[in-house]
Length: 302
Image (tube, rainbow, N blue to C red; front, side, top):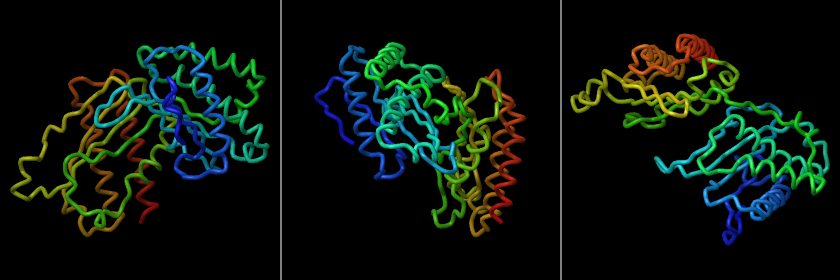
């Protein structure tokens, strides 16, 4: 859905079920998007507003893995500056109300997500988020559109714990030889990790991994014995592991997942050796939790 780039503030996107190209809510989100853009351009919020995306999810079985909020203020690694906010809507409720109420609910959903951002996520320097929230709430109220009774129908996890896989420099097998799907494992893990508290220091763990032939003379130089960790400023921890190609090749799906699982645990064990450890992160509990979840995942993939 394109916006009018002649406006001072134009980079706002509203979407129901963003993984689906077309949705029955498209006309509603178009009108909501135009309403919010008109609101923004009626005020002066400076020149530092980053693009904002508001995602509303409607699912009979909620996939919390999709509630992946991001506030990015950097173009590092090609990631554009943006605020991406998401929330599930009670499936039975939204499908039982007429379009005018769906429109009103979605407008109030933006206010709900702005408040979640203000309370739980970083606010980029120069972003007058509190002013935007106050002014938007007043506009909804003046237009007789403010309705806090919608709030119980917003299903939101704030500050969830998340786990990500990241391919590093080497991926020495063709995709057809890898029988597991790290996206599916991520989904499974995050739908079980989101409500577990491992401490306040870490919100996201990234497992960076390589797959290559350890016995190949040309690869010996790339074997990393230290496997250094990176502890970021945004409650993120990057851990790493290297896998021997031969232990994946021509193995069953169960065997491949078991080997992946073993390496994940080794990488978590090494957190104890970090020179600058997160002050409040129970890595031992994290180890036990990942071990339990991966054992269950293995059993489901025999």
